[in-house]
Image (cartoon, rainbow, N blue to C red; front, side, top):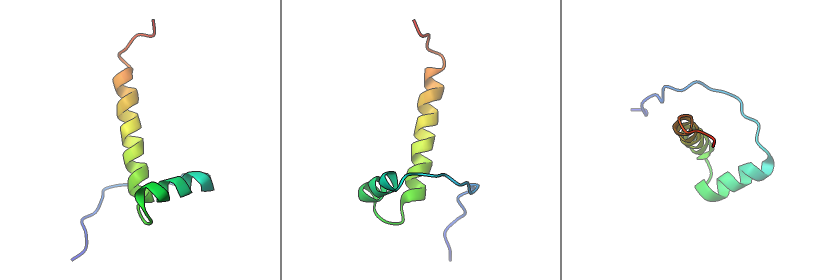
Length: 56
């Protein structure tokens, strides 16, 4: 029995070797895609939440 599908589409993201090393150091080998998915989702949430705020 395999794992269930993630319902995601593949995309190419170019990152510096330094950023990849930082991700690997924090998350461990083989965890880059999950880290990037979560980071993008968190950033989208943050930006969407800030859309309603005025910039006074």
